[in-house]
Image (cartoon, rainbow, N blue to C red; front, top):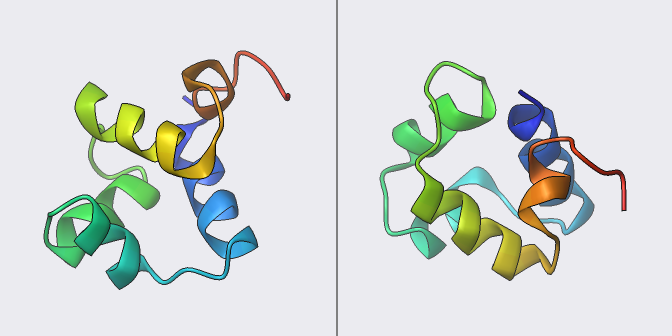
Length: 67
């Protein structure tokens, strides 16, 4: 699944820290870090919130499109 590198790239491209994104998602940084490191599968609600936050589609987050 492409979500791990995509959410890291989006965060870095937007000059955000893991802490900032974790707070936006209302979760502990250790939990968010596990999503970025592909150690844990991200729940759909969090993926939707990230897609909305970064103004991208879920298809982009999971690697179905590069647009």
